[in-house]
Length: 430
Image (cartoon, rainbow, N blue to C red):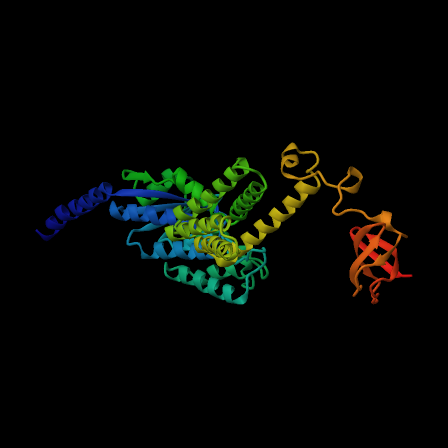
């Protein structure tokens, strides 16, 4: 009776659980291109949706060269906090921050041509980061490996070139990068699959409801705009447009382009979750203060407006250092571009002929800043007042304001004009 009971119960138990699993959706989420905060926001939204739909599994299809350490840390945190089972499907490459994200998944599968590793911390200048950042990153890599039952030595070798693993092609001085076969041998991969169909078979979800969550246009635009390379370009375009607009009457194409660049900057950072409406409000307040400066002289209101605009940019940025670098780049490029436009292209381009003043007033054309009294040079006259050293002299029945060469000349003294400099007439006592 006991064995008959097991014979009846066990198949029904597995069939009921298999049916339950089939009833729950499986989500597949792409992790592509550079790892940054825009990707973090997208993955947060994808995991929230999967949790609300009680998904049985979330597969992250990874193909990334890496990216920002801070963003990778945030992504790893949400992977660790989700109650859902997660699988990293390395479809080509999971390098640097991508390797760290893969290590935080419950399981890892790779395609035959897949690679994973090379996770050294690099600063914005392309150099190896300092000891503090290296220490943090090594600890994070090892922890990610340990929490999923993987040997932390290999994770350390991915981030530290001093670890010697010649059997995996990572001699001292080289970072470890696993191939699919090496990762499977070292226990860093549950298997190598030829594609998604084989992956689904390995995970026993061939009959499951597999639903892809792709980035929409807004997500892709936000990720592109918040890229560390694109941010200084946007700020440069905005600054150039505003500067050119200041020298042209009305509001034209440069102003429109500059405004669009600023709007794109805040839109991308708002969608990516970096900026809030307070940064947009602060920027708008700064613009209003700058406009008020046109009607209220003094400079104080304008200074507050400029500070508000710069502050709003820093408030919208994830990193104050990155924003400072972006602003410096934008300012330098704008100054250089303005000089080149004016000096090199100013005479040839019709646009700059409209904003650059080429006419001048000179003596040859009959323009003078003051009357020229060179006709008095050598003339004699009589002082009508004491010259101390300035005073009045009567020269050919004309009262003339003069100065001496520095000495005192009394009234009713004979003098001669020895120098004229515009309206300045110098006399000497005879």
